[in-house]
Length: 312
Ligand SMILES: Nc1nc2c(ncn2[C@@H]2O[C@H](COP(=O)(O)OP(=O)(O)OP(=O)(O)O)[C@@H](O)[C@H]2O)c(=O)[nH]1
Image 1 (spheres, protein in one colour):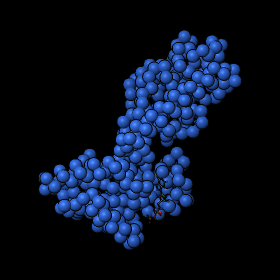
Image 2: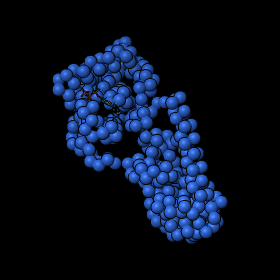
Image 3: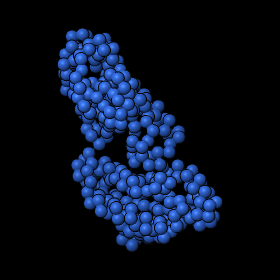
Image 4: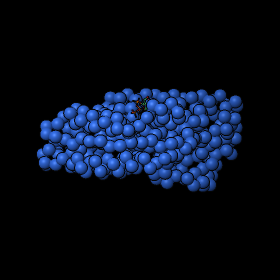
């Protein structure tokens, strides 16, 4: 984010939705508080991992909003004249979404304290902000409805969910069987996760789940599929990979997590986690339920044998 000179423009400010009908006197005071910044395409303006104390008013260009992960499709666009960051700006907490410049964008940046000071003088400003927030809530409700109706994505980790796994298994198992290729499954479960939550808090547990998904997904091939199967359980489908190969891939994934003794999160430094893994290779004919049952049995044995190990 590059701070740039901005020729103060009262007329432009008064056209922005947030400042409609706000007195010129009040706007003139606000003008002094703004800092203009240029954003490059792809630049992340807001992230759930960083606390936000600024409101961004888009003067030109465009921002996109992503929930859960930047790999997901954007859920909305913020055009010139609209603002970003108002929720975290108001409650002084972490943003609930990623906001990214989708093209070179100029925005005005305002620290929360500057606006809070003006609320007392301008009820109109307060009302405008409330209207903007209400619109966001309505938009959020529409997104929830849409995503529930065709939910494929787990919003915490950005991984595909269990429902999607059924679709992808149909496709991949048919393809592998047709090409006389193997297909293997890894089922992973975070070790002692209840104790982790109890000791560090549920939010810390959520970050640990994101760490697991991020660390493992980065090591997979594009044709592999990783899904969050349940709370702290993950499934990885490995097309064209036989049992021996899957064992060594699973072992490599297990070790990669074992080696992360601590990681940075918005809550501070947190300890890493380990996983137990069950492996099963597809047999003909094998339904998803059959393959999962065998991977799950292997996982159960890995837990029983002491955890942080692979079985199958
Ligand atoms: N933070 C967080 N915790 C979750 C989530 N989903 C499930 N959990 C927790 O995961 C824990 C799983 O606990 P258990 O099934 O007893 O297993 P465990 O403590 O990991 O023990 P082992 O699997 O035997 O090593 C429960 O306490 C759940 O509340 C989630 O999305 N976030």
